[in-house]
Length: 84
Image 1: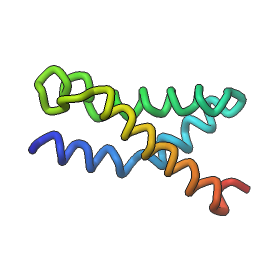
Image 2: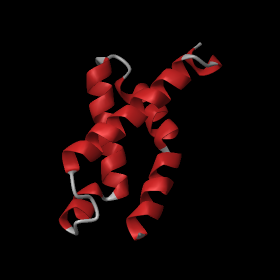
Image 3: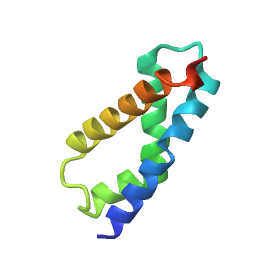
Image 4: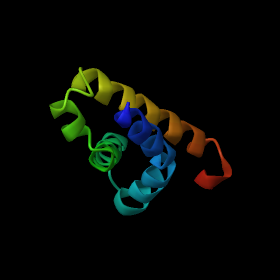
């Protein structure tokens, strides 16, 4: 249950991470920026530790879901005034 709080808290800063990655890696490909964002978010949420302690049972599915969340944030930001 403790990881759930960490997960929800981690989700709240994904837009800031995506924005920061865009600033740092603006010239890179979308896939490279997504990978950087996933690494930042995973590290901040302690995903490695959560997998080791069995709070995440399927790391591959978790990473897939996290990638979808990041894609959704990027889509929302690109559709907003932020893109301009």
